[in-house]
Length: 269
Image 1: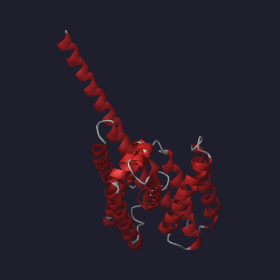
Image 2 (image 1 turned 120 degrees about the horizontal axis):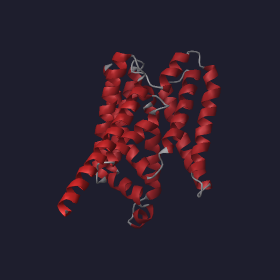
Image 3 (image 1 turned 180 degrees about the vertical axis):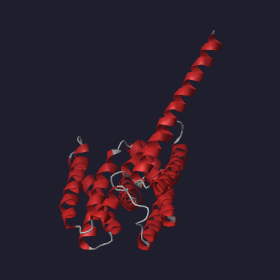
Image 4 (image 1 turned 60 degrees about the vertical axis):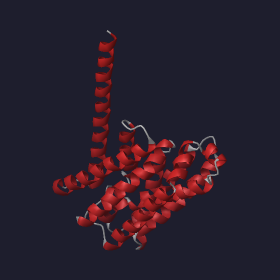
């Protein structure tokens, strides 16, 4: 349980960092594509006796760069690259799942498992999470510029291609190492939901990053507690809490808007 919380908190810190850029670049579906590639990596690892998280990281990185290459081949139809990588991930996972002897192991990666995290996976997640956080802080300004306007960033001297390369790498790593704790089928939700909630009430990029992390940490910790004591799948529980937060934030914003309009109308009268 202690290992699950350490992994869960680390993941809930790094996913919003990547999620803010993914959402602002309108690339939310990239999470789905890479999570399916991650699932293919997991099944390959389980089928051939390799650590599933390590194989998921390799598959996700290869898929991320494959997606970027396909996107350049179809500049006007970039969504094709997402569909191709998603289909490939599902296809490989479907074939390799027939070679997985222990179906319960594969199932634990689909929706996450808080009791299945090994010491090796714990240290791998800690190491890769620290790497993602370090690179995100180091390239904070460059990532900010390229997120909003790549052309202006180029004129300002920002190495846009290198930054996009690093961002793609970080996204693939973040999604693949999250597969054990929250599951490959729901990781894309964890990337998008906290950011969507934060964007409703924040006014700056920095505020969105910070509030997204707070929402993600709250969703993860409360989701792990509930799933452990209620015997639910942690991934699904965390996602539903994230959706509940989004609904509350939207409702809160609507109430504030109603109060403001009412006061404004009274003052005009």
